[in-house]
Amino acid sequence: MANSKYAYVRSFELPDNILPGTYMIVRLDGHSFHKFSTDHGFTKPNDETALRLMDAAAIQIMQAYPEVTMAFGESDEFSFLLRKSCNLFNRRSSKIASTFASLFAATYTYRWAEFFPNTPLQYPPSFDGRVVAYPSSVEIRDYFSWRQADTHINNLYNTTFWALVLNGNLTTAEAHGKLKGTSSSQKQEILFGQFGINYNALPERFRKGSVLYRQEATASVETPAAGVDNTPGQGSITATSIVPPRRPRREIVVEHCDIIGPAFWSSRPSILG
Ligand code: ATP
Ligand code: ATP
Ligand code: MG
Ligand code: MG
Ligand code: MG
Ligand code: MG
Ligand code: MG
Image (tube, rainbow, N blue to C red; front, top):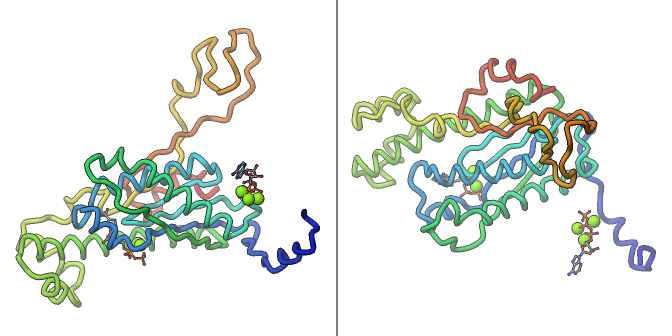
């Protein structure tokens, strides 16, 4: 089969491997989620349940691919950081992007009813994916700062916009017009002056997005009870068994913290290590 007279067509497939020894970031983004969020009645400007479903799909990716050290999510997008040494799919860009996007979309769909028990899924959601290589931790830090700054800019705009529409009785066109060219502090003034909303008191999830990383589990989780081994296929062990050294188990945590400043990174060196 492999050597049939037709097999030459395979040579038309061009290599798309990512440069070795570089960080890779996979960014996924929901297709037409402006429409999807309207069709499914998402709360504006921020539907918290939808954001938690995004987090759940991202956790699934991190569980499936240990090379992912960190992820950042906002709105309908998620970015995943892969180690420099990662050799997943021989670093073939389209394999990585398509596999991540399809696992993410499948998980989002698979778990939809658990998060939205009263909202039937009307059609299948899809996500696009791309892989970008970055040479050093400087660009990685700047990449995540870029996304988190975007979260803030969009959230401030959307929060003010929807306050004007829902509480200020402006049409959407009037609200867009009123916000055109306004600075960050002018938007915060509209929010506070007209609606009594203190922007900085809004949930951190909305202002800072979701930050996922692996944290060493507490000792009680790492150490199995005597005679018990939860590893599938290992059976139970006795106190006299020779237990192979375990890699410390790392659990995936979701936070909504600042990743623009240096503190997040300096206290978690394994993310860029
Ligand atoms: P594209 O297919 O080009 O990505 P899009 O319609 O998905 O188009 P985006 O720029 O990705 O546009 O923006 C996503 C949109 O989805 C947001 O502007 C917002 O309207 C909506 N959205 C996503 N998540 C939420 C959420 N948790 N709550 C409310 N609305 C959301
Ligand atoms: P990769 O992740 O590299 O694609 P793979 O295990 O998916 O690895 P493929 O070369 O894509 O390997 O082959 C798909 C395999 O899935 C087939 O060899 C076959 O074993 C199985 N398979 C797919 N569809 C069917 C089907 N309808 N009935 C039975 N087996 C199937
Ligand atoms: Mg989108
Ligand atoms: Mg988007
Ligand atoms: Mg194959
Ligand atoms: Mg196949
Ligand atoms: Mg296959």
